[in-house]
Length: 231
Image 1 (cartoon, rainbow, N blue to C red):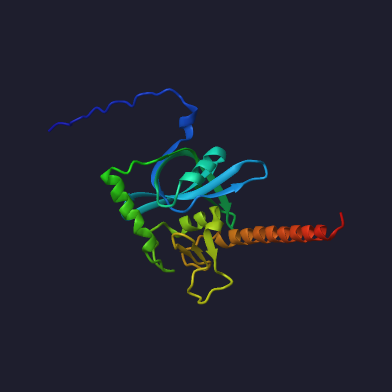
Image 2: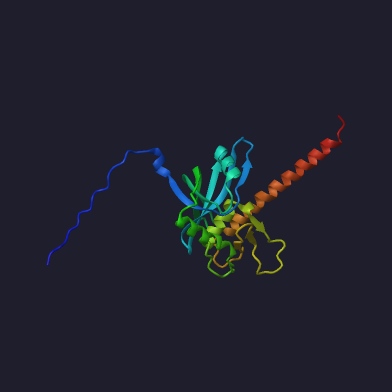
């Protein structure tokens, strides 16, 4: 008897590079149309979600954010369903629940975007797996193949305008409270697997939306009053 010792080579060194401290590379399919917003500061921000598939049954949804020139480029050229490559920085957002616990989720701030060549068999197989996902049905108590309940709520709070809010016009208690406009993904406020912070974050979101609506109404009323004033 003897012990067989295997010697593994030591990893080589590389020069320190600031860009490598936080760099993420992804290839995936665009899961929703690019949305864009022009900010009062003059900056432009756009966003969407990327479906990254490792197998026909394993999909991870990643939120993507684009700024300024890249935001305009993405909005003009990138469409839902296209396969793209992105490189960017991982940014973590933290949400605090009612009991004081913090939930952290990430997004990629994109710094480079490219389309993926369509002539490879692996890309074709990837697309076939992606195209069938939007036709799957999801139940309130069933496991969601497009991501966990936590991931879906994170995606909702990252881009709430991508979802229909059905809370005030539900025809049945079993109908979802929120439904994604493109993928059909569904969320229930009283869902069994919901994280604890959902209701508190919904209250904050509803409060912000209400404040914006009140501000818009005051602005329209002010403009209407100005129209009645003589020159």
